[in-house]
Amino acid sequence: MERSECPHCHKQIKWYDNVPLVSYILLRGKCRECKNKISLQYPIVEFVMALLFVFVFFYYSSFATFSLFSIIRDCLVLFVLTFIFVYDTKHLEVSDAVTLGASLLFFIVSLFFGANWFDMTLGALIGAGFFLLQFVISKGKWVGGGDIRIGLLMGILLGWKLTILALWIAYVVGGIFSIILVLMKKKGMKTEVAFGTYLTVATFIAMFWGTQILNWYFRLIF
Ligand SMILES: [Zn+2]
Image (cartoon, rainbow, N blue to C red; front, side, top):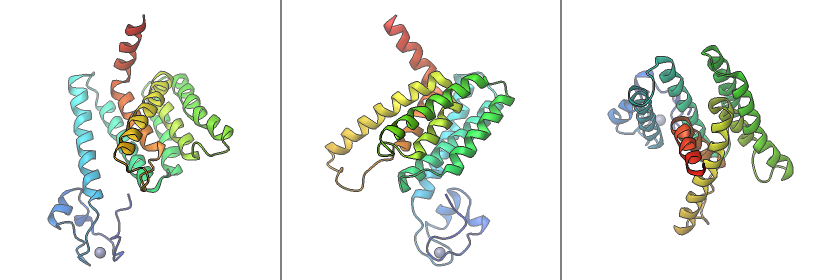
């Protein structure tokens, strides 16, 4: 999400032309310098981010103990997840600096606020190990190295129980989406979806509804 320059004329975008959503509307989606169209992707992503932030605030006001720290942390997490989602969808790869940096950051911050280090470490081992194993067995054909690092981040964000759930959700969401793509006969086109895209969606679901899903599931079997 490099936003510092215009993709057409490569002129630096002034800070007052770089205000999320507002600038896009004021400039009618065109660069001030060269008047070329700016991709709709930017305002859409900005709009989704805004919705997610409102959602987090709403979630902690209504369904969980209100905590300013949790709100800021979750907004930051969703910012990172959105970045990985967009980047992975567009380029079919993951920025290692982002996944590794975020893993370290959230590990330390969570520790500082009383999270269980063992739970996070076990989650990271399961998340990263799950993809590392596939990577080794298939010699890098089934999964990419980026998935291993997303798995690591998931483990730290979710702890071991929700990590397992999120991996399962990712395959369900991925399966459903693949069927939809096949039904729409779009598979032949460049519609390959990076698995990291599903992992970020699954992490989001597990973060906010994971515990309820697990409770519901175990009530179902026992
Ligand atoms: Zn321009």
